[in-house]
Length: 275
Ligand SMILES: [Zn+2]
Image 1 (spheres, protein in one colour):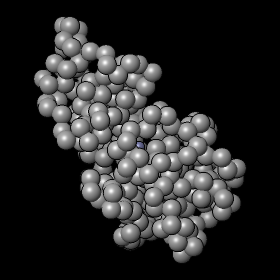
Image 2 (cartoon, rainbow, N blue to C red; image 1 turned 90 degrees about the vertical axis):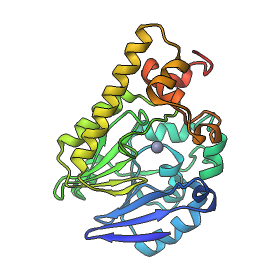
Image 3 (cartoon, helix red, strand yellow; image 1 turned 45 degrees about the vertical axis):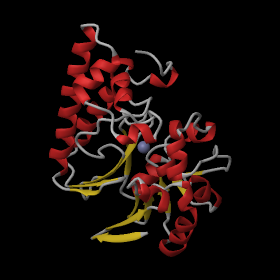
Image 4 (cartoon, rainbow, N blue to C red; image 1 turned 30 degrees about the horizontal axis):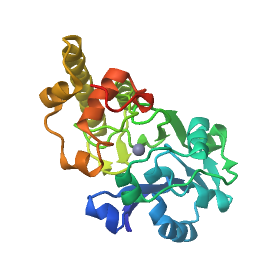
């Protein structure tokens, strides 16, 4: 657990030996007394100590993935008010099926959320100076946290890097590009990324990613129109699969990126062998 102060924002980087093995870590942030995201299930002990130490007045959850919402149950049991979108909460209640082995290995498994949540409504979050904004793409329920007074964006998994060539089966790259432009239009002076930490030159970074996505989507669409297979498009546009695709048994892969473009974010329900 590494803590870094950025004026009014405290960044807490969480990892453990299994996530470090694949060079993954995740950040939670404390801003205006509010904890943004809850880390992954295997970090429960550390998050509990963090809650004791920092005593946040409320918690915000950006989306349902286990590295961000992994300790929602702990927060709920402590009775802390939680700002969470209805669709995110529904996804946590339902539990995610078919979570790849590598995700369970890296972050541990998150059981369906059974505990009652003390909701923090949007207007109450607004009195704390923060807003949850819907930015779908990475997941359908993805939100960013916006501090308008300080032009500070807590991006969750909106950014992650300009050229992220791998996707999970249910991502929607088109919606993602739109969300990036919406976030850039806010003109954030600071962007705190869920995994990358403080991102320099945030507006340019967000637009560079949106441009790369739109250009890549265009190339994929053009080849699909010519009848190319998923495999051939993947090879031509994104190149060979990285080791992460093998390690994740294809759950996080370039082929999924191509499928996500062609399926428009409904890949979850489609057979994975297509193309
Ligand atoms: Zn995520």
